[in-house]
Amino acid sequence: MTDLALELLRVEYAYRRDVALRGVSLKVEPGEVVAITGPSGCGKSTLLHCAAGILRPQAGTVQLVGQNLADLSEANRTRLRRTQAGVVLQFGQLVPDLTLIDNVALPLLLEGHDRQAARRAAREWLDRAGVGEDATAVPGELSGGQNQRAAVARALVTGPAIVFADEPTGSLDSLAGEQMMELLLASVRNGGAALVLVTHDNMIAAYADREVRLRDGVVQHEVALS
Ligand SMILES: Nc1ncnc2c1ncn2[C@@H]1O[C@H](COP(=O)(O)OP(=O)(O)OP(=O)(O)O)[C@@H](O)[C@H]1O
Image (cartoon, rainbow, N blue to C red; front, side):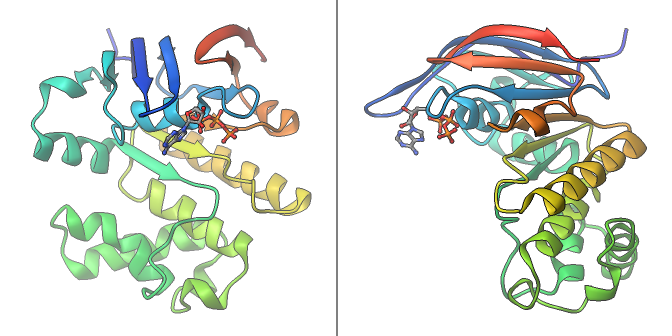
């Protein structure tokens, strides 16, 4: 039996003042594209951060590719996250002082790959993402759309089992947003990765295989879209 890409069981998360998640369960199959939707403040980003191992839930379990994150040491959790999970956020979040090629090579260098091989793989991913010609530019010299393309390359370069994207088109106009979604979907499908996508935009959610709608920190309903 193949492991699920992601499984959350009764996950709860509270910030100092607000309870963001009140027992959320979610399964994502390998290669599946799932959109997390719902009104502002319903817990979408918190769910994504718990699933990606960035936040630690106070209750419930998160399994990434069959491994319970709570059972792993800090070092092993970081390693699993780096190798198995790619992350794309709203504004790219590239390192501003590094060129695109160095930004994309970074996850491989952190995993101990040699510099030349890391840069070669980074260049290939930048080409696939349509920004190969901008490989030596720094993020500040490029548009939001170009930076988001590089962020997709950085998320996919390690060959992750799952990609987490939080409003990846939120800073783009609608044409650049559509192109970005096409790239993200083609990239995860080529790499065989699952995609968990947070969005408040119905047009973007429509790209998913399944929509999971949150309300007040719980799953309100799930709909198969394809
Ligand atoms: N860093 C934080 N510190 C304190 N409270 C937070 C933090 N991030 C989120 N919250 C609170 O947790 C709840 C859920 O927020 P979250 O950002 O997960 O929702 P969201 O659905 O992603 O919202 P949006 O669509 O507006 O981004 C909200 O009440 C929010 O105010």
